[in-house]
Amino acid sequence: MVASNSYCNSIHRTPSNIDEVINSYCCFVLAGGKSSRFGTNKSLALFGGQHMVLVVANNLQAAFGTEVRLIGADAQTVLETRLEFYSGPREGDGPLAAIIDAMENTISDYFVFSPNDTPFFTSSGFLALQDRMEATPADVVVAVDDSDEAHAHWLLSIWKKSTCLPVLLSEYERGVRSVHGAVEGLHIERVAFDAASVRNINALTDLPDQGTI
Image 1: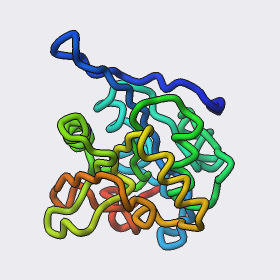
Image 2 (image 1 turned 90 degrees about the horizontal axis):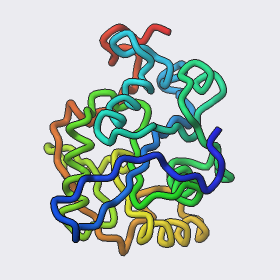
Image 3 (image 1 turned 90 degrees about the vertical axis):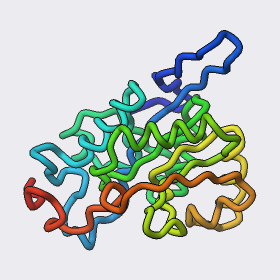
Image 4 (image 1 turned 135 degrees about the vertical axis):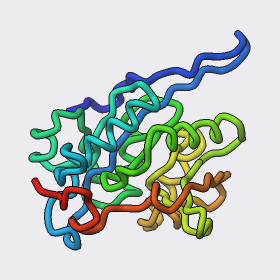
């Protein structure tokens, strides 16, 4: 288990000149939530012969070159994947709570999140989000479906801690629990991807090998 206020062992983008600021990125897979529609533990369903949560973690690691942590994972997932994990004080209160817990208890400039059920979103997708973050004054960069750009995939995203955490925490303490309901006032950049790459796995039949465990 990761200790509170730990540093993220994150990659720093190499600057093109000595005056450029180097930023740190920390990666989390959101592994909590009940899989009632799915019928079993989504994280441990097989995708291409590998636990789905590991596919997601490997995509993040390939993009950022850093260890990837789970947040909200159950004991079985932690045991079988052997990934670092963090369990915060707001455990079980939804993805907004998990995002706040991750930011509040880890030292990093930027936080990259992915749900455990988006194995089609590859390292190139995460790098596209990072490129947009570094090219704009964004507080949040989020993936959207290119066929419906109003539909933001809030859990496929990068967040700037210094500007986002105070806003998210304030909204959470006001009683807001949805991610989309807590971002008012933040500078949001959307990056469009094809629908296939951002889709969630919602049923065993969505998996190439039928999700056997």
